[in-house]
Image (cartoon, rainbow, N blue to C red; front, side, top):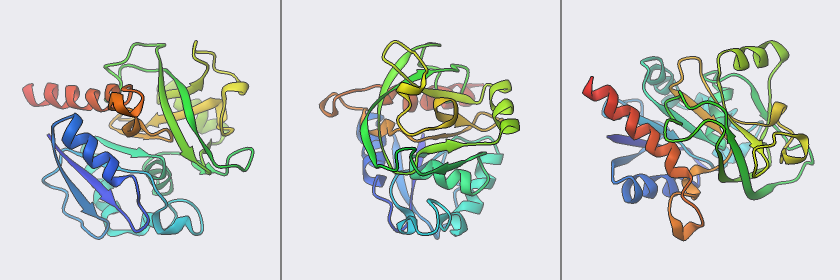
Length: 234
């Protein structure tokens, strides 16, 4: 499987994502500069975390105009997998590929800590290695991770099972006390209606090797591999 890791000016989790794909997943991977538009050789695109264009205006508001984003829209419309992590999630929302917006954390503080994520849907491209109701541990590192949508969009997300991850306690309690940034309904990650585009604020690439303190991120990346293998064999 061929992965592409998109690099914008200000991206800084690109090397982490690249190394996880190459060393942990043992898959082929290349960097994609934000001015590149040919994605034909890739099977999966990763938009990593960072501060694209310094996060001026709003997080992801400038990156959405990069030439690569139109190609990513076309890539996703073909049903191919795209995962946006942290700043990548923000860029996907600003580009209209995913609904909603990421705003300043409720306490206006940068939060860098381990979080518990309740798995809400295991029928998605990115969670088939998880159990429904399982709690995985994935760290966050953001100042603008407060996910917001209007009530109609929230109802649509719930109806279509587009909410993949919710911030919770270690036992799966989804409540305000376990919400690190103020996200509506504790939402930590969603997919588009087709289920092939994931946006999440926590960083799964940081928990893919025991030396880093956890391997729950492999359940997400491994699910991508499983689903790609299934689609190829059909």
